[in-house]
Amino acid sequence: MFGQRKDIKVLTGNSNPELANAICKKLGINLGNSEVGSFSDGENFVSIYETVRGSDAFVIQSTCAFQNEGHSGSVNDSLMELLIMIDALKRASAGRITAVIPYFGYARQDRKTKPRDPISAKLVANLITEAGADRVLTMDLHANQIQGFFDIPVDNLLGSPIFVEHFTHKFEDVHDETIVVSPDVGSVARARAFAQKLNMPLAIVDKRRQKANSSEVMNIIGDVKDKHVILLDDMVDTGGSLCHAAKALVEIGKAKDVTACASHGVLSGPAIQRIQESVLDQVIFLDTIPPKPGTKCDKIKYLSVAHMFAEAISHVYMETAVSPLFL
Image (cartoon, rainbow, N blue to C red):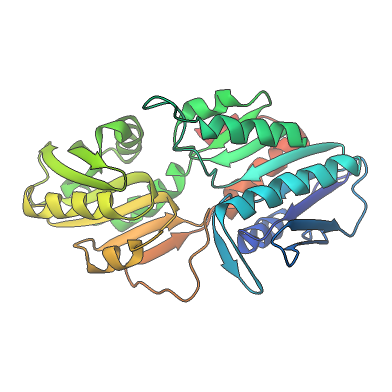
């Protein structure tokens, strides 16, 4: 696939090995031979078992909590694995190192909202750069301005084309009776662009957040009566905001049904139970964060982003424009 160019290496940590394997399958190459784990005291370690000197190296690692065969860890474990892998590749004289971060954690702390707040997204950007990454490839950052926190190139892929293709077929027969809804005012720009691609109208759920991880729905801007609703967000954490918005759309707005979609399914705390007990018909995530093992919810479905990241990696490796992926 890549001809007589410099060697390409794709490696992964423990946060999302299934996605890394799927990306390598799309690229037609084998996943790099490495071991990422932790010592008995909890310190992370990395061992790379093949030469990477002069190689174009891609490290695939979402900064999310994980639990897979023989390994489990927190968001911080995922971040440390990423940093140590980048450092190992740098010290092994890799030609170029790209941090492929399907889900970029700490992105919600992107500004000071009260005195003495940290800007953790900027700190993490500094850490990745200082570790030795030459560029970053990610998807649907919580805030686009986070790209400016890096002093290296950042390609922020959009997951919306995957959702557009899915919903175009799903609601093909009832297109004129379907509407896109933004769950809050802050997501209006994202929802508007999504609605334009689907050629559907837009409504907004106006809510007032009382405290972290809780929200109170106040009003619905737009007519959703007897409509099939697509509720769009960038991530779902505890699921409270999403489920409250869906409830308001059905009970206050008299929507016919509500299907939600979000790029990143963080699903912490009671999220899965809330979704299962909610009025939502279905919630669709991208597999930037893997499904939690041992938990099952009939309403949750995952769509793969492997083909999009494989294409982006191919463009970066071949040094051709990535911009066609944003159309």
